[in-house]
Each structure stands twice: as structure tokens, then as C-alpha cells.
Amino acid sequence: MDSAVNALINALTSIRDQADSVLRKIEEPRRERSLAWKCTACGHVKQFTRPASTEVGPSFDAIMARRDSVNKILSAFQEQYKAIGPDASNSQFTVPFNQAILDFDAERGRFNHELFKIAKAIH
Image 1 (tube, rainbow, N blue to C red):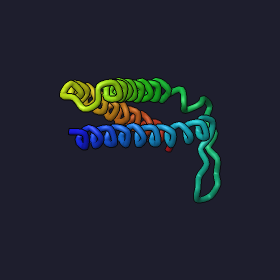
Image 2: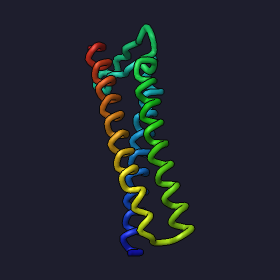
Image 3: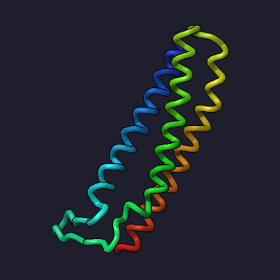
Image 4: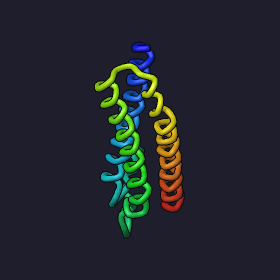
């Protein structure tokens, strides 16, 4: 039972770390490209009349909220596990965590769709 719980903790931690990594990568270019895009081939800089980040801001905020819900479930699981150790009641976190990951993935998809629309409008 202990190895199964450790495997679950490792899997949940890995998913959280991957989500955090992706969000950091998304956030960095957003700051860089909020006022202009630079062509990597020729170096031409396309200036915007308004920052692109305002269009994707709500979607990005939604992703951050979903990430927070994943972290909240993971933290509650870790606290319970530290308090009582391996126990059948730990399975109560499985369904909410799976749903939180699905919600996070859906928000990520909406965010990517918004970015695609912006990029298509620019070209």
C-alpha cells in the first residue's frame, strides 16, 4: 500500500511540476510579445497598436486558477498522508484530482485557441 501511495504522490507532483513549467514558458513569451513580435528569420519587428496580452489575459488567468485548484488538492492529499499515512481514505483525492487535471487541460486548450486566433489575425 505504501508504494502505491508513494507512486501516486510522485505522479501528482510530476504533473504539477509539468504544469508549472508549461505555464512559466507561456508567461515569458507573453511578456516579451505583448508589444511586438520579432521575426527570428529576418529580425523584422511587428509593432501592435494594442498589447496582445489583453486578449489572452482572461484565458491565462483561468489557467492559473485551474493550476491553483490542482495544487490545493495535492496539498490536501499530502497533509492527510503525513497525518495518517497510507489509508483507504486517501483515494478520496483521486476523482477530484483527475477532474482538476481535465479542467486544466480544457483551459489550456482554450488558451492555445486564443493564441492561434491572434497569430492568424496578425499574419
